[in-house]
Image (cartoon, rainbow, N blue to C red):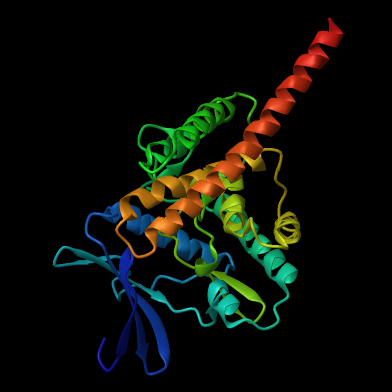
Length: 314
């Protein structure tokens, strides 16, 4: 773009540049080679455009004069999005100050539910192609974020617990009676991917989005706050906001809190050389142990209650 100022702002999965052209702001993304196929990226952009059209505040793909969203230049996939003004939730937290935390998480819950509602109402094109955070994508032989039970730093007891989590979760997810809400999800609604402009949350970074369980999205927005003093209050606020927009059965939330926590134990394995990776890895494992214990303990309690009830009937 002629007469535009560019600034590199992110380098983790993709190189992202903030582009300022006479006051109009854009995000220029240069995608890491081999990370996504053209079809996957094109589908992501189509989905984001549908979310924007549905009234959700998300980056909107900027097409060329020929209407194309995705371009390949010298083998590098390139796209451009509108830039959303505001601050990420993580940046707001670092600044301190007074924040209506319950109101903030209620608004996040509403925005998440709106994304799910819009996605269900949208008919993707036949070429739409995104991965699935389903039983196979979470717990199969090659999970999207890696085999968490194979993390080499796990102790014997931690590995046994996560194996137990995997087996029990596979059994529960594959029950014909599961009936879990499933569809397109963001899959990474952490504080860095939520931008606030005033009171309005805006969702960014759909890179990990695909088909999945809606409870997995809720768990993803909550899991890193589990040790906050007001976690229960924020959890209830987010769920209340979600339920203002659409209904959801929350009975399996413990399962997905465990799966979301465990997924980070797999994700960190290929990033062990990054700065502070050791501390992050230990924190992820400790969190996974907590929520695996919660899920498995509650599951065992339900199973024992059902067994007692059936015994009384006979």
